Amino acid sequence: MPDNFLRGGALMLAATLLFSLSDTMAKYITQSVPAVQLAAIRYTVFVIMAASPLLRNRRVSMRSRRPALQILRGVGVVSSAVCFILSLAHLPIAEATAINFITPLLITALAMPVLGEVVRLPGWIAVFVGFLGMLVVVRPGAHGLQPAALLVLLSSLSWSVAMLVTRKLSGIDRPGVTLLWTAATGFVMLMAALPFFLAPMTWRLAGLSVALGVIASTGQWLAVLAFRHARATVLAPLGYAQLIWSSVLGLLVFGSVPDRWVVVGAVIIALSGVFIVHLERVRVAALRAGARSG
Figure (tube, rainbow, N blue to C red):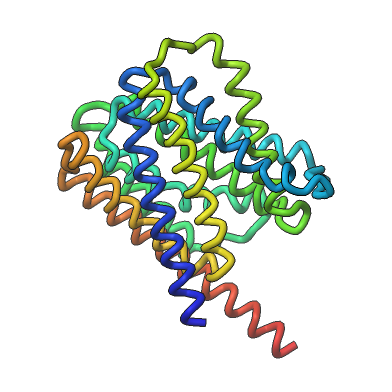
C-alpha cells in the first residue's frame, strides 16, 4: 500500500538521521572518553529500553529457544558498535559511513556458506563492484591502508554475521526477545571490559553519553517500526541516506568535507547495494508467482 510505504519510508529516514546523529556524538565524545566506556553507557540505556516490556508486564516471557544463537547475535552487534566507534576517532564520519555501506554486500557474499542461499552470477558481480567502490573510498595505494578503515570493515563483518543470525532466528523467537538478548549480551560483555577502560568523565560528557544511548536505541526502534509498514527490499535503499546526514553533520560539527573519491566510492557501493535489493525483489516476486501458479 502506498500509505504504508510512505510511513515506512519516513520512519526509515528518521532512523538513519538518528544513527548519523549518534555517530557524530560518538566521534565528539570519544575525543575525551574511551570507546568501550561510551559503548557501556550506550548499552546500559539499550538494555533498560529493551527490558521495559518485561517490566510493564511480568507475564511476558523473554526466554529464547535458541540462546546460543542469540548470544552470537549479541556478540556481533556489540563488536560492530565498538569497532565503528573506535574508527570514528581517526576517520571522518562520512568516510566511515561510506565504507560501512559494504555491509549488504558482505551479507550477500556470506549468505551462501552460512545460510545455504544461492547467490547467482549477477549477485556476485554486484558484490565485486561494491568491493571496488570500497577500495575507491579507502584508496590503500594513495596513503596506505589506515587501521581505522580496517576497523570499519571489521564492524561491517560483525554486523553482517549478526544479520545472518537474525535470519536464522526469524520465526523462532519474537523480535522483543531478540532485542533484549542482544542488549543483555552487549551489556555483560562491556561491563566485563569496562574496568580496563574506565576514565573520569564530566557530568556534561556523561549526559551526552546517555543521550547518545537514547538516540541510538530510538533509531533501532524506528527501524523496526519501518519494517512493519514496508518490505525490506523497499526500505533498504533508503539506508544510504545516512551518508547525506553524516556528511552534513560532519561539516557542521567538525568542518570535515568528504573528498570526491569518498563520494564516488560511496555511489558505487550504493548502486551495487540497490542492484542486490532489486535482485532480491525479483527473486521474491518469482517465488510468489510460482506459489500462486502451483
